[in-house]
Length: 466
Image 1 (cartoon, rainbow, N blue to C red):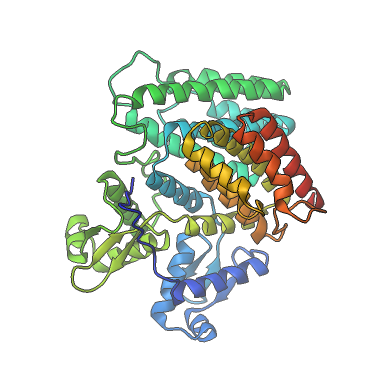
Image 2 (cartoon, helix red, strand yellow):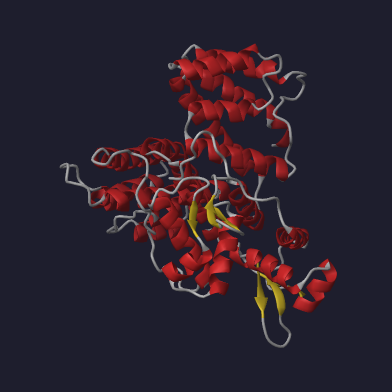
């Protein structure tokens, strides 16, 4: 986890010319309907079109290649070619951020309990015989990282946002399992021992068309995983991930460029060694010697780290690779690109947003028992216009890092896709008129009433786009 002292915040520099060129090329790809395989132009043509140097263009292309948006094809007839992106850059970006902010086992599994049973319900409603066969094939003997079955359920839900979030949650959960698997035995069976049987119970419920049973069985399975993690994490100094993260699928993508692998190693070392925000992780000569790589590869890896606000190379006396405060902006951008390619639809965002908002209400109601959260809620109630930042502030009061991040992603995607830019309900003139009763119920500790009011609010202000 990256630690900021005294409220200190080191952040990335303003966007340079290369990212601006990359954004323009991304927009061009989106406007053309993501034509996979289309040639956007040769290096010479692109340099002339954007009026930039070879170095700037190549850095922009590296960013596009890192996000799997486009790649440079060399040789006769070569140039920048549009790619079909997959979810790996988006999921890795989110896992990096959640590792950095120190996500607890409890926060992680609260999010899993909100989203994965929902995925099981949606998958049950539309699952085919061929898909049942796929589920059964992935439900067999499991390694400590039990991800494939859960990711497949998220995929079969038909909801692109839900599928992506499920993959992030299961990958991160898998890293926790690997972190704690060598902890002293507590007598609690490892979750992967019973996983095959639990998976098949979920599949049987889906095959029977019993979506309620599929949800209940998924909850039971996730609860076993959480209980094991909580029990074993207590043998460590904290249930937050303070040890070096482990790649749950080492070597799964041998085609990944060396610079990306190096960036991952540097990130793991920054996290695992507990470096603080603003601290110099190492000068360029020190890093070259430590990782035994060439200067070109190191500098490309640093660009990737800078893009994700992991670290930034500071030049001059006393310079080096400086650790930055976590910032999910680049991660959210990467996710937006991937979901755009997947054909993001408003109903996908609506379903996931409702689940996240209700989870935030639950977390905020629990937090309201404490004096700090209660004071923040009363301050919100005292404002004339509660609507400004209501949803994000309520999520922050709840204190669940996963829900706060996921809700931020969903609301930003909602606005960026043009589905609507306001939280106000149609026909109302003041957002506070609909938000105030929710806050009052949260502050009173009435979770059920607060969730009921939030659900009605969401369904009212989104009905105009359904």
